[in-house]
Length: 151
Image (cartoon, rainbow, N blue to C red; front, side):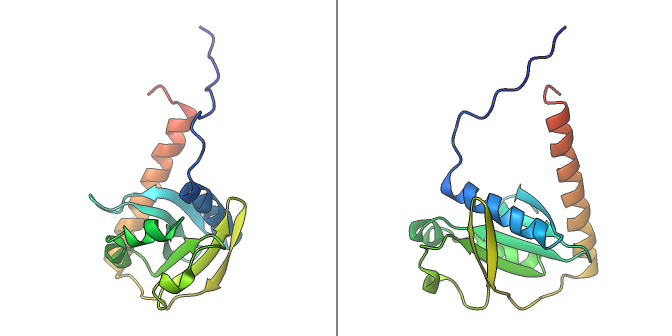
């Protein structure tokens, strides 16, 4: 039986998804393995989580507009799942809205730049081990889903 190629996604990416793509490219440039839309626990979904070469974990929340930021009341719950927390926005975003103690990335669909590095708050060893294992398993499942989408 012949295998038919998968058709491209007919829905164009949303602005936040384009920012996330640029963030992933930025993280890869810093030797981090990024994963978009990661769920560390039920009820929480971070836009991008990055696993660094020394096991460090960064969370990046991508905001495409003022309204997008103001409607997000969950972001503080993500702090307990990372060593560093960043906001990623485009160049037209009013950055004065963002908390000054968090990281700041300016990004577009093609890349990004870290403008402000947040203070590191190291995860407890047990939390780091659990989140690293979940990140690896989720990434492996996604890769397998691309290789064998009918399963």
